[in-house]
View (cartoon, one colour):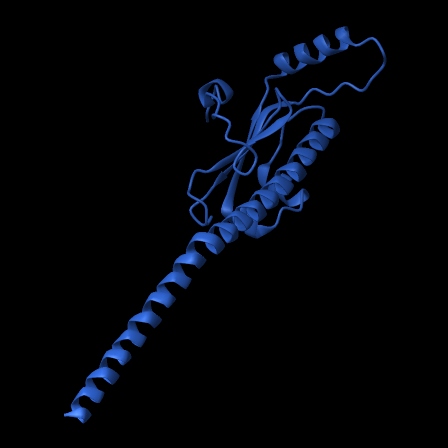
Length: 178
């Protein structure tokens, strides 16, 4: 009889150990899920945002240089601009870049307005474009259609990794889609 009771006690303690280990494993996995995974995701999002911000800044500089060299946007090629801006192929595979140019009359009017307001000889910059935008493609680990854009009107970046700005009315920006 004593031998049977000893087997029952060892069986109970074996079950208790098993469930104790299972509970500990579940708690560790849950803790990792709650505390570690969000930090890793935030770090990856920050890295992706920095990557696209750098690419857009390079593209913006290339567009400005092109406008100055060619006295306008005629003959501009996005593929050539991306190459000249040294934007990595991996970034180009994940993001589509778009430029909404200003019509020449609007650009000229803005330039004249700024020059008329200028009295101390400072450098005057008027962007030749309304906006430069990057849109996530299917190959991007982000959701397809995620956007980051540089708004020339307020001279600021918006969208993914920058702020939660409401997207502008794209039909006002891309008035003549072709």
